[in-house]
Image: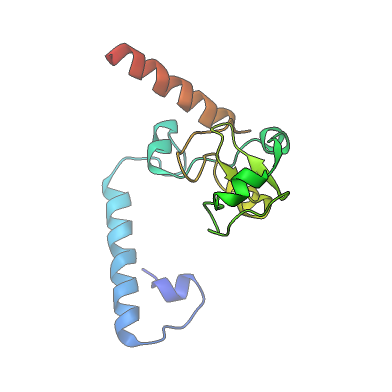
Length: 145
């Protein structure tokens, strides 16, 4: 059986690290040999354990642009991501939940996951498996209540 470092064509930085990596690799191999599980396919139910996919590109493109009013600026309204105060007449993005963000703050976020960073309201995604998972989750929730 080859070691972790042989398999990955690299050298350990210290002998103790090599021992830990080899022990973990051996444990993983033992588990995979002992279990009759196909680790190659992802079950849709595993979405509960993972970060949701990015928001749909069309949804992100269509987020309304809002101009900060003098009243909003006077209240010291801040972007929840960078915590900088919005300035009067500044153009920001409005999520469907009505939370406001700088474009430079919310666009990278929505490129990684589909929810509002504050309230977790989800936007639709371009991922059909995830959208089906959300529908199943709603159906299960309505059957239990």
